[in-house]
Length: 585
Image (cartoon, rainbow, N blue to C red; front, side, top):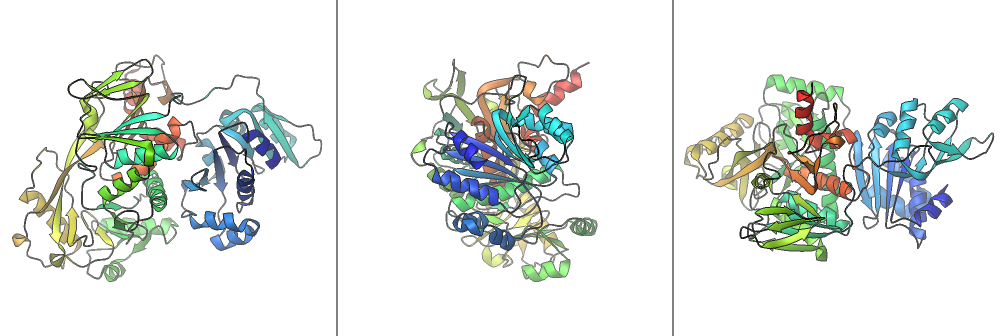
């Protein structure tokens, strides 16, 4: 099978394998080694693998001893074993491993990719799952699997695969040669010219530059301020941690994916505290009250999170960890912490190298659609740049264009209080709950942040009092005289969507509607070449890398880094789809 794969990938710039027989990863390492050994290899190898549970890193290392060098590199970035899709970059970002942890049938249903080769274990799947594999397969895709019965082979054949004539063979090979026409599921074809204009030099825009430049794109960044990260990304410190929920809803699953992928990307930039300012000092999230603490403790007993991901601490243990009495029990996220957003933006942009061109102190006022490109002009009508792709990563600024003025985005004011370290409790992990407190950063602790529905840009005492009151609820023994504290801090405005999830992907054409009675997301008309990375609210640190990766994968026709239903939950056209479904008779 490896010989067939090598022969096939020599004709392609990118090659994708789906493996549901990953076991300890031996097959993956063998293909990775074959890729390394082949001078005519494709530029990028995508490998999607369903991961069985129960193997420790030590056990995997033992089973992978034949490929010691590759095994060491893989296990060095091995993710925390929590459910979901995990994207890992290896070998100068040319090997892209997407691990899928969970029920194998559910994982396969959630893949959005075009597959060149299938390695399958003996699966007791219904016909609908085999049909799903046929929808993922490229023309002439090859398949290898043990065959348990004639009925199973018949289902695979009904999905469009033709088996080699090998009577009695325990393991059979097949080729995808369906009787029907193969179609691609993506809403927009990849652009021929890989050049994108990105509006906004905050976390969203910087991450988009970095993920596209990684793929060889030319990126032109336009920023109306004189420097990076001057608006929502301009705080002294941002907190990163996942979000937990009792039903593991889409928001929790997305936050888990975003949190883990952000840490992976940051490591490639040099790591927290090295490539940019911050600390992975942990985050301690205290329950709001006794009822909330009881619910969270019950959640901890119903879930089986690895200790390096999340731990529930009762009030005495939480207080001991913090070094000060807290109001209740809480979740400890040992891998969480704080980051200085501006330094992270700078690191992401520096990683772009010569692929990046910047325009600062320039306001993009007009978007003009040309035959096969977009022209971005300033307030005087002069052209700033032209490219086939424009990405709006400028928060509320996206509403200034006629094409996108109807997007359901709202500005939410947030005031952060800066407190001299001598007046704040000396803590090591970030403390949060209904508010938050960071450790001292350059002599200042950050306390925040308010959620205000007004446009006041100046600091105000009432917002500072609110921040300090919430901190006192978490730290009841904190005795600082808040009446003499100076009014210091920063005001920023979060860009928030109505459902509190980001908008990631091709932007909808609000002037057109789908003629279908029961439209799907793919049926909603789009503005060709115009994309959004918007609505990150308070979680821009972790949203930015995953959202940029998702959009870059869409633009390059690569396997998506998350489950298809989660990508749909971020699709900017979701609001129009809901509205059209409500109004259809």
